[in-house]
Image 1 (cartoon, one colour):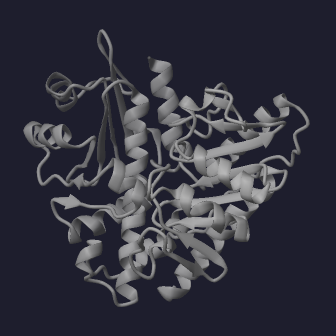
Image 2 (cartoon, one colour):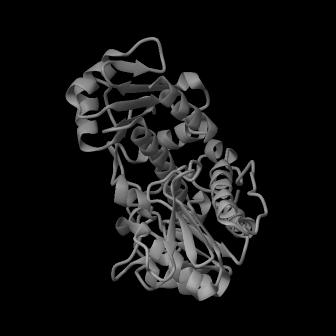
Length: 378
C-alpha cells in the first residue's frame, strides 16, 4: 500500500501538479488507514467513515494552478463548471467550499469526486483505488487550467458573457500570464519503424511515456495505436499512457478477433483513420492550448469544421454513435494527418514512425500557444 502511495505522490510531482512532497497528503484505507504523512487528520478519518471510498488526496496544487483557482473562485463562487468535453462528461462541475468543516467537505464529496477547499487545496476521492483519486485530481487541474485560459481569451475577444458557454468576464491576471510557458521540457520518442511485434509494443510504450513526460497529455484520457502485419495494436481503455506495458490490445483488421472488447473507446476512429490515410502510427493527446484554442470562435455542432490557420477542427462525441468522432475525424486526418477535436484534444498520425506523429502534435500545441499569446496581447 505504501508503494502505491509513493507512486502517485511521485506522479503528482512529475506532472507538475504539486510543487513539493509536503504539499500533498495521500491516504488509502485497507484494514487501517495508510498515509503519506505521520498523522491522519480528523477530517480524513471522518470522510472515510461517512463516504464509500478507499482513498483520499488532499493537496495544495502548484503555484500556477493555485493562482488559477483563486481567480476562478472569485468569479465562480460556490461552483466552477468546466466547458471542455472531457470535464463535462466526467467531472460535470467542481464544488468550491466556503468552509472547511467536516460536514461541508463530506456533503461536497458525496455529490462529486473532488472539491476545492477555501485555501485553494483540492480534495479528491477514489471509490476503489488511489489511482482513481489521482485521475480526478489531475483531471480537475486540467479542467481548471482550460476553463481559466478559455474565459480570459473569450473576455479579450469580446464574447465574455455568453450564457450558453457559461463564460464570465475575467480580467487577465499578469501573475498567471507571466507563468504561461510553451510545452516542455520535451521528451521525444525514439525513431523506430517496427519490423516485429516486440518492436511495435516497445515503440507504443516509449511514445506513451514521452507524450506524458512532454505534457501533451496527462497519464489518462489519451490513446495510441500502431498497425502492423494485418493487426492494429492499440492501448486499452482507461490505460495510463505512461504505463502501457501489458495494456495493449492486438486487434485483427479483418474483424476476426474479439480482442477489441477492452480497447480504447476511440478504436473505431483509429481503424478508419488508418484505412483512409494508410498511416500506421496514430497518437491522441490533450495538449492544453490546443484544447483552449479549439473552443475559440464559438460553440461547434456535430459535422461542423473550422480551421486554426491550416489545422482542421472537428466536433463529435467520443466513440461511435450517430454523432461519434468516427464519422468526422478520419476525413480531417486524411486532409492533414492531424486534427483537433473541439474541446477534446489533438489527433496526429504518421506513415511509419511515432516520432513524426509526436512532432505534428507538438508543433500544433506550440502554434496554439503562440496564437493564444498574440490574441491576449502578451
